[in-house]
Length: 474
Image 1 (tube, rainbow, N blue to C red):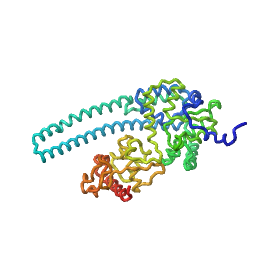
Image 2: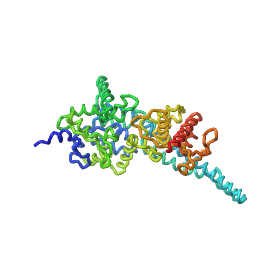
Image 3: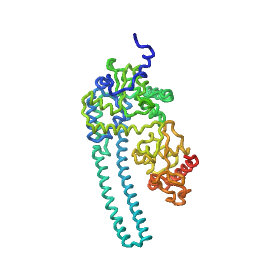
Image 4: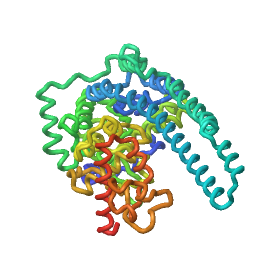
């Protein structure tokens, strides 16, 4: 007796969560077509040279069954340059941030010396000890010590550049990754959809699927243009079309992506971890007669080693996992609340910090670069700007953006934490309620680096936020 209609028609929803132990998993690696998402290809620019070579060698085991949707190819050739630029900025920002911290340490040592000398003079008239302390902590002596730290920190940052193995000013013709990828795929790349097909797919995405939150791609609905919003859906439509043309016996598709947000995966519940949306498996089966498997790069490369005998060391796996996590932290569950503790670990959604920047009339190229930077050192500023502009009604929040609970200043009798700076550190003309205000140390650093005009805008935002928080009791 065949299965009842209910069990057949909703089979995808009734299947258990995919597992590395699934009996049919090996068939996807050995017989199916393999589709790597754009973020998996761009990850190659993030690996060290040794790990990158190991990963490319592993991918060679899949040559002949790799297939690249046109949409992935377009995003890859466009995105590789910005990925290199992000790495270049991150390293430059790190060097600059190290120097700022060392200069702050220099000032702190001088202030500590002056404090002790003042006490020695006031209560001990210890002129000899003061002279000795002045010599011990003279600027030249402090600079000599700090220079040892500076050189050691610089050595490690330079090592990162060397281990990367790619010149940061690389031209397209000199890009070895681009050449290897082109060789791996050969002719296995999708054709560009014609204008009529593209327009039809865009209309389906924006008018029907995204409003109804039909995966994939609906989490990107608020991007700048319909074409940018529909990238995942365009990829998906190409994948379905290509899968329908594969001989019936081998219609298996292994899709590999770092993207685990809610338009690809069901949100996690209290009792189970998230799994790819069953509707994706159902749609591919219904429209193309093909079976689907979705894996993250960490699982995928483990499968390449297990089923295709690729050689991947533990250090390479660790790097694959690290890079994958970095890509995943750029995508957010809108239910998250970003705080000072979590902000350094997440990039804001694409373009959101720049939108917040422009909404309050900030203008300097220095702060604009910080708003657009991929460096973790700028995330606190970016998230605060996103949060404060929404809180004060300076822009309309996106439907999908997380809540932000980060303050740059506070009005209270006691500081929020011990490292916050009293408002009296600001001049009377710069800050109202100086005697009852506290300022976050990261915000003081930001003000020091900002041009005068933007500094005034930032101070007003921080002061208004502090007053708003005081009135609301938060």
